[in-house]
Image (cartoon, rainbow, N blue to C red; front, side, top):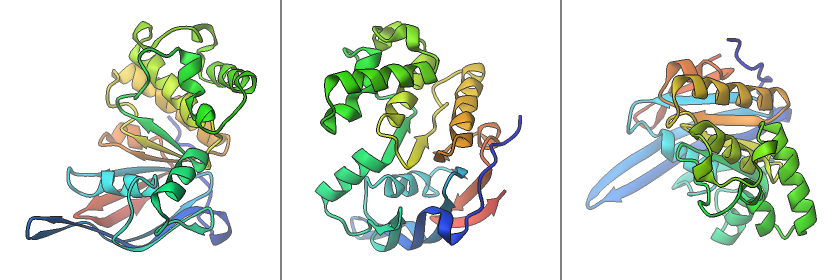
Length: 237
């Protein structure tokens, strides 16, 4: 297994960067520092794995990168734009047009077909049905599901469902793909197939940031960020 070749994180090639990011929650009278001064840059076309023990801040970091939450302080620069203080509507627009999400639980619509699930982001962007259907067909072929366009999730294996989720994440041609334990619900063989697909997408230029607790899955990434107590513990690769 050869990790995907990620590109150097030079300033001109940065896709996303965090500057002294802190996220503080109040649990009654107790202050919980979920993120405590994170500063890191993710290069365009790079492939990162985020690792750490439960409670280390991995999920909070991924939520911030996905514009699902805002930092308490610090700046988040995505594609050259400071998105740290945008309102909910603006964040929704960023998510819709610039970020693709891949979830452990797939999050597919049970009553929708493969084609309809893949095309869902395009529906919200106002694409014409014919154009959306054509893009869904192309993406289904990309992930090896061109023969399953009319199937529903319950008719697919777990690996096939995750392929649908990956195709859906690519529908809006996002600048960045965020994957939260993308192999967590899959057997080891199917998990390796999904990781090979993500590696191929990275080689085609997609920036991928993935949370995982599995070292063998993290090994596919060109760079690995280890977190501890809401801070960067170390970076490898």
